[in-house]
Image 1 (cartoon, one colour):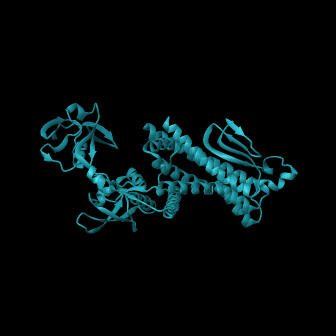
Image 2: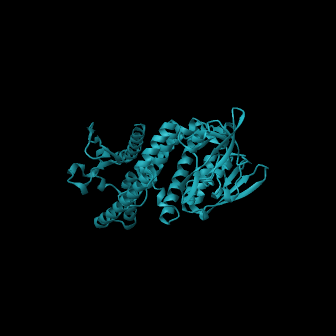
Image 3: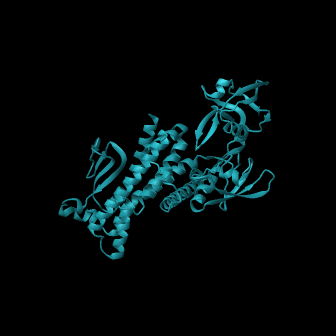
Length: 447
């Protein structure tokens, strides 16, 4: 129920703000607005305080502002100066672009609301390096402090991830400068190409196989009917050795289990201060075209390390607004670069998300709290703004493209060309939506 509510609130807010941008600028330009609709389909609610009818419809996948236009029906002579099609091309461009720009403004306001209250962040310290990943191959070590990504200084893990995403969109190799545990500066070159498509996609999402989290060699989570529980392991058990080899950290334990499918392991643990020997045999499971061991157990986080990582960055009102605009601009530019990389094949279409994934993430962030939910809304608002500015017929950017051509030619693009463009644009968007929906089903239902 929370997921549905969070999704409806998100779509309602983002669509309303977008359409208000069109509506407000249309009114400023003297255009008569006939209808303001949130959603599509037969209206559920409607009211008309003045000349504009305001409606709410049942299909929450968008909205529209219907303006008086001679191309869509007869217009009274007295209203002809207020028809959209009779406005100067610059006014039409302003009205069309106002929707996407309103989404970018909304994103900045949402980011400002988050930033103004102080931003919880993590120092860019490496806590875990996952084996057999691009980060491990690049030489990352626990305790590395990341200083810069692609030449840009970073001060938090959020900036690290953002830098990796942006760098991965323009280069196959992401250059990272670190300060190791001894204080020496070193360069780590992250190259995901030899690790396959999934690793490249993960790198483009800011995950090269390294994270700030650090875990103790101690059982923190236990699957009720898993191999570990049946063998007698309990939450709180400290893992000391396996087959007589001492364990230094959780990653070494994971390495042994993953590489021992169906093999018996003799595990020495400490429970309530006393040593205990437990034998277990990891279950063999297929994962990414290989067979690995699995026992159904998770680690305990290293609280002392987590406390060392965390800090809060505070801003005054002006600084928060400047940071919000900067964040909006960076996110918008990353969205543009991502779309461009998809066109040239550098980014996978598997990264596309549709309404099901958006609804799922809306619910997840709402459960985490107001701040994550506001950040999610800001990200989606930026995406909507950027998407609508693309020069694709049926989108706002497509109309802008026609109006620019009109400015250059000195006369409007022919209706035949516009109609053809609308058909091509509709087919393109429908195809992208279908692909995004397939990705949604794959992510959510394990396809």
